Image 1 (cartoon, rainbow, N blue to C red):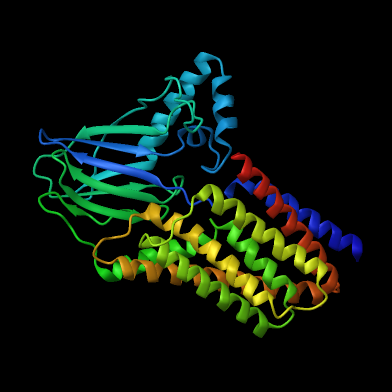
Image 2 (image 1 turned 60 degrees about the vertical axis):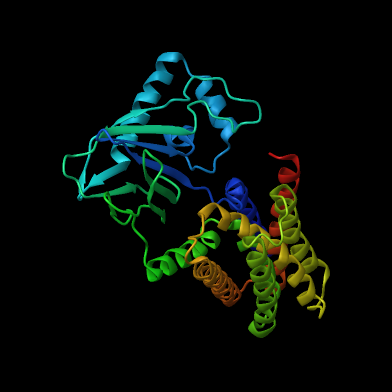
Length: 372
């Protein structure tokens, strides 16, 4: 039985190690679609083009991908660029009145030296699409396949007038924007989008928050004490999320992110040392919740909250986060029940699960302090 649990812990560490760079990853594909007065359109699509070209996750190690592409012979690299351009044509759509418009693709940063301190990239971080607006077109929309992270879209006229702004989930198409006038998203659509984005920030994008909640869940044999801890965590991160969103509290991600990783390790190590749940743990969880709220705020800041519905979007995002956390708890309790029913010792599951979580948390803390 000990061998089975040890193997289970090894697999947990291995899986977590394979996803290390996904920790707290909430990247966006930033798209600015410009409608020119002369009947042309241009779209700048910002994402990790190296990852897209090599067919790996956008969260992969940027420096390693850039080195891999830089090491290619020139003909092979040219072929990779050509394939990337074709891939962009297949997986992106600019539609006018529901019909896709053809466009050309250019990669303006490919081959240029990288500025010091910039994100490592061989192909650059911007793809430029250009095409013709069909005569008489009344609406325009944008689509990116699930190969891309969620899209932060802005549609503007070349004189600077903003027609439309929207956050799109993976594989979603934007609401059609009237070319002749600015459009406003309904409150219900805003609510639904931000609930979904909040949930995605936990599952699948918030692995560090997931591990923190798992660290709480594995030690709790009963649901009631766990819900008390999660409620304290929720109150704390709701407080700092709101204060940070309105500019009352601010802390650099270079400080917040390593501390979040250390909070994961602390909870897991406490699981290993404690024989029973301490009454002070709720206070500790509340304190860590304040940190995690600042992490959520960093993600929310990237979304560009709608000016008219800031409070609604904030509440909806937080609600989505809570649904994600409760989903993690339900899955953890279900998995523990299944494994113990199959004869595995709960104490060993707690021990080896906590070892795995602590190891990942400490590893992340070291990487984040080092800026890797």
